[in-house]
Image (cartoon, rainbow, N blue to C red; front, side, top):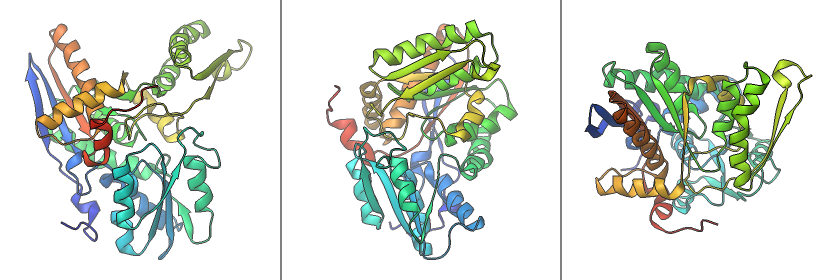
Length: 363
């Protein structure tokens, strides 16, 4: 079925909940965003991104949209924008799925592969290259990481869907953390309906979300408590060979007494989740996150293969999120507590199949 030309923003709604398991008073349900028209949750936000650029006068007929993307956002943007006469250029990391890059090229997207070992804002890094290309005549930059239009779309549509489908029974929302829009947008709505709902973000080993969340959590605590909370996390990153340094200045203003410097590169294999820096939009909503769980690549891929055996054909980031949900479920069972856990499965499997089924270098 050809999807080009279909009204994407009207089709990406009401994805089903799929009961994965229900044992000991704890249920895990999958919010099947992988069943959206192009196979990902980004179908929710891509039309909002493009329409926002038009509304703000940044995008005009015949222009080129430039973005940095792991593939899902670029694919959704292409399906929405190309039928309207726009061109699309995507800067993607060289380690991303070849299937995803091939699919983009098949749609007519211009794909620039950039080295994953470079800092993102390096002139030849993913964000730096995208921004450079967007400065060319007839081009504009689609910043999916700091554009609130995507956040609002998830908050106003996906959040209410989850609330209705769980019949006010939801206790936990679990999702992998990449741009943060899906988790934080849905969390913003759900926390308003019930502040007791726990929001759990899942990241791969090497991502630094837990450091940023910890920093936000202790920001207003005494200096000694801040240092005590951050030191173990920083030590863990340093043990992985990452350059993370903390400077403490007791005489500085309260919000400047601790300074953390990061010089890190992507070191995980799961596409679509994990961060090496924090966007301003994400920082604003970090307090919504109650817990960050870290999952190993191979653990996520093993879970993804188990899901495939049940005919749930999702990608590796979905496997990571389900691992996180099962950790939460086991904890609730040990505590003899009930739970209704919803896991957002963000994309379908074809774009990550070589990583899920083919061994990789763990060095």
